[in-house]
Amino acid sequence: MQRPLIGIEVDLEATSTGRRYAKAYEAYFDAVSDAGGAPLLVPPAPAAALERQLSVLDGLVIPGGDDFHASEWGEEQRPCERFTPSDERRLGAGRSLLGAVDERGLPFLGVCYGMQLLCLLRGGSLIQDIPDEVEAPLDHRAYHPIAVDEGTLLASLAAGDLSPEVNSRHHQAVREPGRGLRVSARASDGVVEAIEGEDPSVFRLGVQWHPENLGAAAMGGGLFAGLIEAASKFSYARA
Image (cartoon, rainbow, N blue to C red; front, side):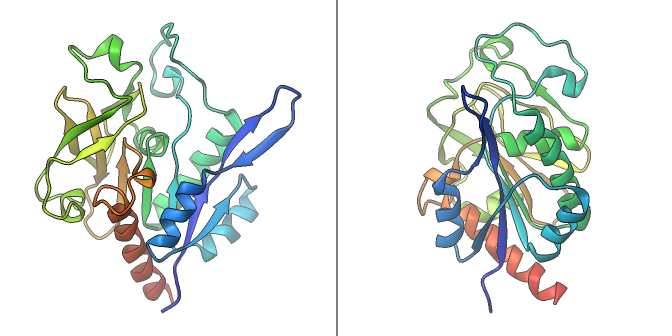
């Protein structure tokens, strides 16, 4: 069987001189390749081009990125020195891309920003700033353990370890996961660390940590392996 094609949404960045670039950290396409997939970078595209992109993709990864303005879920944005706004073009294109992927049931893995985008797409809400809103918070910019719920997609990928340690780099987090989504892991301070679809027939997973940097660990390469397996099945069914 051919390697499934896994789209990796690119981030967008402007330089001080105004030049704009699309970028993706190599850890993402290495993780997809190491898990048996064929990575394909996906830039913003108009509707007709997006349809063509989706016609060949067997799965999608939306990587980490910057922050979401609180107006995205109907709150007033509070001052926060840690707030870095997401690129507006990336955000608009990402909504269209993930919406189309979600509608078609393509296997999906959202990392950090990608998890939060899934939450917002489904009408959920975020914590604007963990240190400001969570009582006795952990350091979510460091390794820490999480508790994985039994009977979840994430638990099936955890290789029997439901209290793994993960590598976080965030100050926003999911508060309410949104329609058709459930929480599948939390940190000890109650912060949501993973969400997933309630429909077990579709691989739809968002994690707050960075599995692309965890090598072959279950919560690293194991998540990409799960995505690739689901994408292979999707490709076979579509053919």
